[in-house]
Image 1: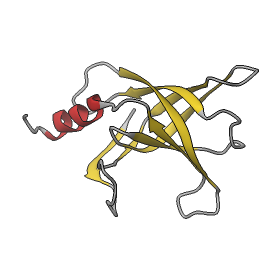
Image 2: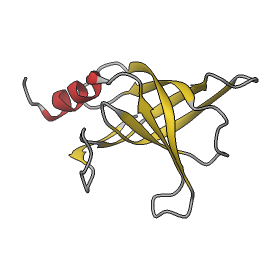
Image 3: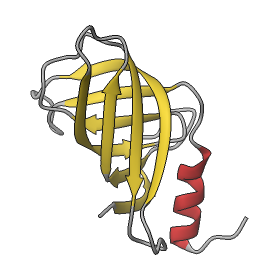
Image 4: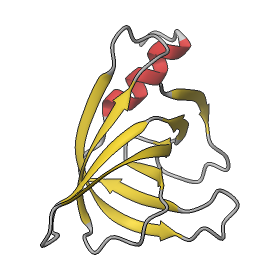
Length: 124
C-alpha cells in the first residue's frame, strides 16, 4: 500500500533527508480530555519526523503516538513502526500540497532508512 519514492524530497535543507512516502499512519493524541484517534496518510517521512495529509481542524494536543504501516516494495508482510512525537506545525490548505500536519519524532525512526535501503537494493 505504501507508495515509495526512494529519492529525497527537494529542496533538502534539513538535518535528515525526507523521503516521499504515502502510507497509512494511525495517530493517537495523548493529552486530550476526550481520546482522539485518527487514520491519515503520510506525505513524506524522515528518521526525525513525518509530514501527514491533514484535512481536520488543528488538534488541541501537541503530544501524539503514531504507528506507520509500511507495505509493498521488498516487504512480504506489512511492518508497523510505532513512535512518539510532537505536533510542530499545521499547514493550511492554501499551500500547493494542501493541508498538512508536521510531527517531530521524540526518538529517531532508524527503520525508515533501512526500509528505503532495502527497497533500493543497497547494502550496508
